[in-house]
Image (cartoon, rainbow, N blue to C red; front, top):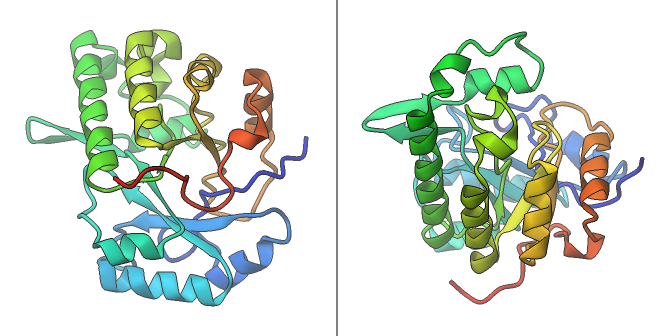
Length: 255
């Protein structure tokens, strides 16, 4: 199935991708896409000066340019740098609870098929820990909307909880509705993420009923591949293409 919607979530070698910005500028001929490298990222996108060079280089190549802003970790952006981006994807890769960072790397490796089993399944199966992670997630997203002015919520239900079972059990309906309501009230698009296969169908149906907008994100770090899983997710949830972003931040009242 061919999907022509704009792909917002693509990495380059300016963070942990393997493809240069110049080659990304060529691959827009395959399908429309931008670039959205991790911020911050080690020795490549360490600070706003690095980020400004990245924006300038991508713009010179004619690319739509965003970032994957690490919610709960990344420092606030200046207004000028934020506005120089075509969009900001806010995404959570870890949360802090009582001074301890709960990282999602092992869960990500399992979900993407790089690990055969999720070693921490028993730990994250504990109801109390799950509840605390979910509540902290809502707090971090709320800050991302209000302070950091994100435009897209990247891989919304990816976490260390994703590998442990039915998403309708792991992510209670009441929690899903709260997250969706925050996005709708803030004018934030909900990403359909090819790499992690999230969110699940029931989440998308709830979001659609509330009038949410959406975005497509392959989240690729390598060459472009067809958005086969994403196309099926959109089709099964009956999401109209008119509700998807097309390479720019959503129209909304100034926050």
